[in-house]
Image 1 (cartoon, rainbow, N blue to C red):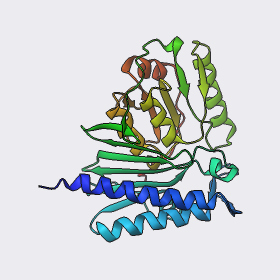
Image 2 (tube, rainbow, N blue to C red):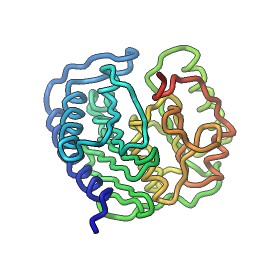
Image 3 (tube, rainbow, N blue to C red):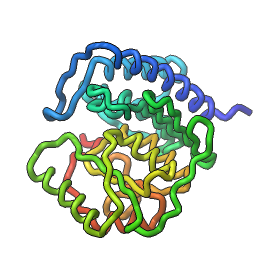
Image 4 (cartoon, helix red, strand yellow):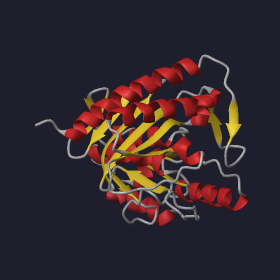
Length: 277
């Protein structure tokens, strides 16, 4: 019998490639940039067009499924997370990178059933890297299996984080103080690539030991969370507890040892939940 979630995953991979083609074409043209929540929170017409293409393509094939999409939420649709099969979509993760033509721009498609993530697709379209992960079936990049780093010593680790789009002095102060705490351990280094989806995939490849961020959204991390876990890594809340997809906080790490050490060092700041009424 055909596996229904595999059918969904194969279709998601096909749609992500199509979205990647649209993004690469748009990179060659002038773009209109608009602002969302802050002067650093950008959106373009391409974000909206790509999301519309992804959702309409999937809806046509799976009409009974639910959707949480970044641009739909920005337009006022509620992020309602139910037991129904749900697609969690970021059409362009790394919009600021896209605007500046900085080459880490990804299409992120996560899929959950009964609120449990089943698979994730992250297509880093400038690099032409298709990352995939399916619960219990492993993680791959362009068909090659992925495995997290085996480094257990935080002082020999490379960590990813992001500065985020909030320019509120208190938030910025906490973000910078968290970076300071980790650098003082000391870790080998901190990097910011500009795309949460790519960050989680880099943990899965073993290139870095961990990625943490507060203030992201479910559509930034849903797909990558599956890919990291299927590559042998873990995803946590920043307090060291289990990941809550709607809480806008994540630590993705190669191991409990590294993940918990980061959780011990960093302080959280409050963010409105993605599923807040």
